[in-house]
Image (cartoon, rainbow, N blue to C red; front, side, top):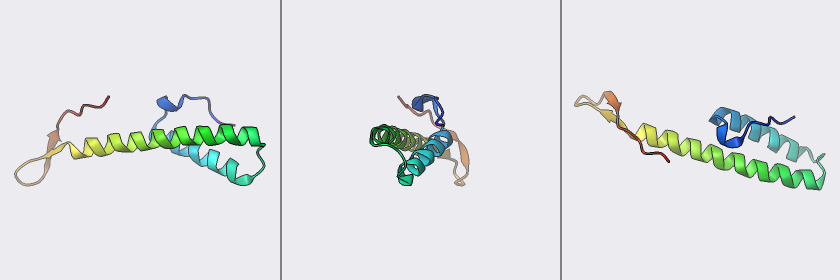
Length: 81
């Protein structure tokens, strides 16, 4: 059974796990057409959420500041909406 946690509240790992479940169910071919459509829509939302989380992580990594020796010294604030 799929969790009822709102996708927007899921961590990247939770969303990936849920997406793997959705893909597995769709690939099984045992899901009625109407349920397949709902699963596909949920999968698309999960994929979008994962992409957003990755983009946020990349943004944070890009904001790490380096000192003169090339060692991380801190981060700059990131403006994520």
